Image (tube, rainbow, N blue to C red; front, top):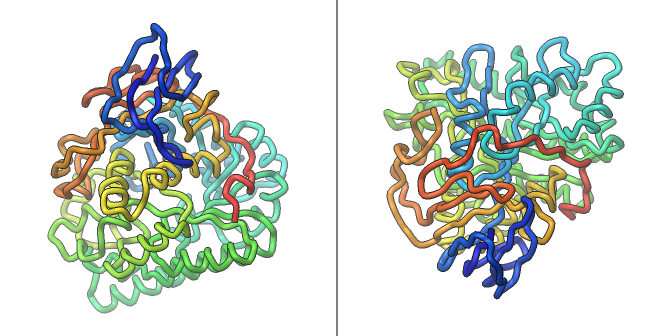
Length: 458
């Protein structure tokens, strides 16, 4: 396959170039490539590396609710948004060893994804002999896991002793600990206070999970990282104070990494006062416009290293009639819209360059989670994962054009600029002109290498 005449954009810059694909790999990137390969005309289009989404929750079962999206529908939706690799989470159930959790998750994913995938673990407890299990997990290609500092009493929560002991070993193992950072006591205390005042409606969702809860848990994680020498990755940051704490720690030599999500950059907490507030319930919640602007400022300055969708496709029908912030399983669909939103609200208003877009959505996630240069780049030898993106068309986004089984989008009605025309994974066209054109079993499991701090320098 030869992709001819487009503008190739990488984290290092952009240039007019052709891309030759051979045997699932990028063979050559330069102008004037000749040959008799199948030719795709990319004139006027951006040729981007496939998006690497480091944060998705497909087929998530919380014990009280299950997402509408499974791996088939979720990976289809991802491909339609230019994603060629997603990283999902394997929950560790009570009594499970790490490798058992991974095996259970692989049995659900394998053969059911249109695009490639890797796996993080969710670690909730450390069984006897867990140190050896950690080494086996790394050998199996899983080199990261998430710790939840909230949701006490569920399968997700891990106490500080579990978190700290894991970080004592993670650097030596080449393992990256991720953190859902919210102080559980503050969240529970605020919820109880609001309920006592009769304030239970979704209008109070953001109030119930204040920004200080996020910032405090981030501060705790930074302390653990400093004390153990182990790196730490903070997922879905919503408040600029948390990002500032990470930036300060990075200047002091702490290997800390910040991730945010498109919803914190394009939506704000005024949505919770609307009649359709159920469309916007996620944790952490949306913040005010001032915080949103400050988050953009930090993203533009390079203080945030990664963007994930945090796709968690519960349907609106699962929330019908619920107007109590304690009763809704939080999460929104978003894997299909990350590239579109970051182009529309980042590149078009010149908050980000096109190379910044690729760095945040493709290259840095691949580097952080041990997939680069196989994923997240367009260079000879990389997997032939590409997106043909037209940066010109402007439209009002409609949920009807999207592919998630959640059947809604929190971004419905926003004016967006750009369109994914084709998504190519390992040289195979997966999505083209609004339709999936590949098999649901084409995607394969990709092993992550151990965390390398040189990939995301301080």
